[in-house]
Image (cartoon, rainbow, N blue to C red; front, side):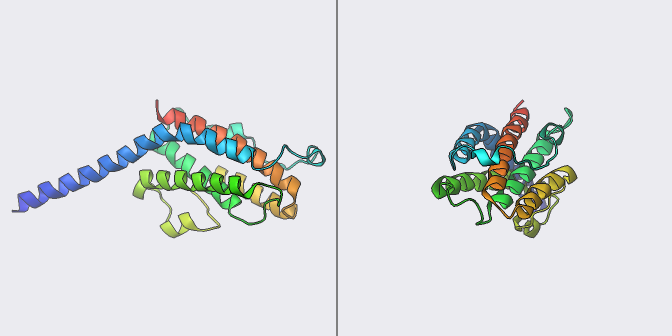
Amino acid sequence: MALQMLFAACLIIGSMSELLALQCVQIKVRFPHLNPEMTRLLTRTGPDMPSQCIRKKIRLDSLENLYKVPDTSTAEDLAMFAYEALRHIEVIFSSDLQPVYWDERKLDDFLNILNRKTQKLRECLGDRIPITKEAQEAESFVGTNVALNSYFQKMKEALKSEGYDDCAWEIIRKEVLYNLNWINHLVNRMTK
């Protein structure tokens, strides 16, 4: 009897890990298809950057350095990094302070896809995420990667210091588009 219970427990645990692995495989397959859609939606949320915003600068860290992860990183490491970056993006766009001329429908569609991606990554990573569930869902999300936290905190502070004006949002939107491209590179590394 005890042997049967042990076998059943092993079978359940094995099935759960296979299910999690399957979810991670689905992310690897679906992510490259969803990322261009997110990029398209965010690009079309508003018109090109207004001319009065072109000279405006917001000082942020180099994305190349931010997304420089070791070649020895595991697929799980890359998934965790992508999860945290997407979660930070989700928090930034969760405010209702975006420019009024942005297409609300496209922004909502972008946020829906972004939310689905972060949820799938969270499911894939399961209890390997070293952040409490409450902290993961908090509007003031802080992940475990110090560089990511610092980078996105600077984004939030820049928006706030600029009074959430249209130009600041346009610069942030452009920066997030760059981030999505870098995140896509990470996910592509997961599939190799």
